[in-house]
Length: 117
Image (cartoon, rainbow, N blue to C red):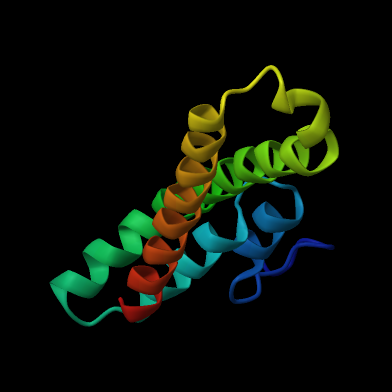
């Protein structure tokens, strides 16, 4: 095959790079694949397979969705708080703020746990 013009062996990581550039693999999947190749224990392989399979990307998407929801609710309260005040009872306002605090706290807790892993 070496005698065929224009034919060459692929460089190390070339297929992964091409898949990433074509949008077939996300950055966390590529990192998971690199971790899988470097893994020396069963636990490392399982973690790397989960990451390469999109577990981390799904977690990030959940955080992004939750934070966008919190931001939208906070913007409504800031932008239209006076207008909505008559439509929203004091208890509902307190409930919305508590829900926002809880959601942001949940994401922050997940981030801390992920950094400790």
